[in-house]
Length: 74
Ligand SMILES: [Zn+2]
Image (cartoon, rainbow, N blue to C red; front, side):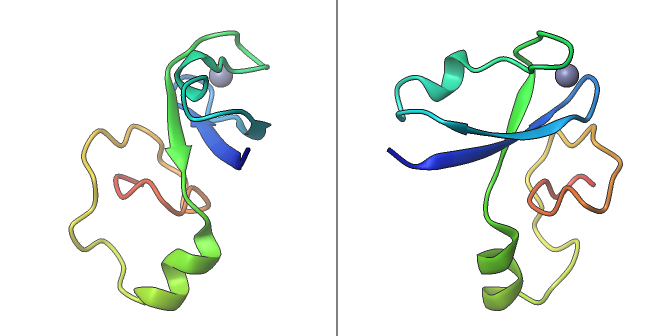
């Protein structure tokens, strides 16, 4: 199973979970307990292949941190 990185939309807590694909929708934030999470993709791959910033970012970014590298709304 792969490890997924998540960013909580409510408290911006970032964490990783080792879950199957079918279970990742059930993951909840360990800090606030809410399930309003955004999945992060590896920043490494993102930067290597892209190098662009703020282009065609996925919508729904309520996370305002630059460190949240995959959510384009950041
Ligand atoms: Zn949270």
